[in-house]
Length: 370
Image 1 (spheres, rainbow, N blue to C red):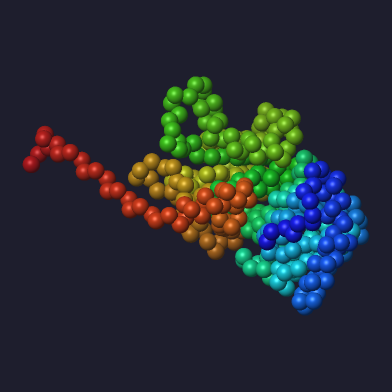
Image 2: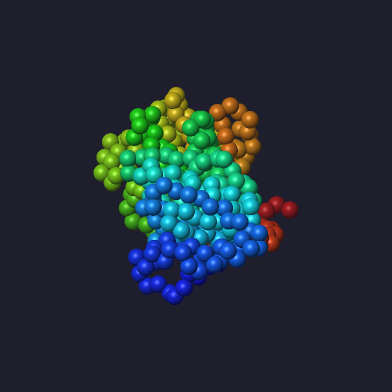
């Protein structure tokens, strides 16, 4: 729903806040009266700290705009009170979101538009507008506090705490790898594991490795870069560098896992859809004492050469029902990278699947016996 205009265009942050906090004293009061005359009483949410209310609204009321657009409500601010108009379920969900975000601000957390969108996802059930009591799961590292932005992400983090082997599948942008690295880094910082081991299959996605200069590690580093990026986002750079030098943090291609027993460690296998059944079995059987394994992948983006099938879906099916093993399936609704990524995923899923072309027949061999 479009935001209600409060008058002339404002040109600076201070005037925006002054205008937003003054709603209800002029045109807003008349609008409220008109709404009341139609029998639509607003749901008013009161807060104690006016400064936190300003942070709750966001710069240029950006957070409030996200709330209105996503839930289809109209929000009117008057000092430390926010009046909500719209369908009953949507107003209840908006109230729950505002109260959750205000509580986070009161604890000293910072919030942005992405956090608002995440709180909305948690406050509504399965795409509806019914308020949900589930709160977003959180993980704290020394560098930052990470909050789940979808119910599936919260379920993922809770599953990682409970289980020793967790599969996470779904489209790009759902946080599968990032949250796995965040969880592993938090365990390392808290002393719940001795090592961090992150691995990926070095499978060429339409490219060739041979032309790259350097030794084997330098050739495969581009494939492992997303793991480095996630590590540096949640740990101090010096902590990462020291961990890599001492072996406390190890990032290696899947081929380096053969023959090892990985004990007292958090082990992450990323892009597991590019593992064959034999490779994935080899990796899973490396699990040692006091260790956890996290296996992530997108079954729709397999880069294996023709004739080789992904072993990810088979492994999930084979291990279903075993204690300490769980599978979290993300969907396009869980894409948090940005909304455009979600629309891209949706477009690809909606596109008709082209039939596979049959392999060309081998040419006759004249020397073969007849």
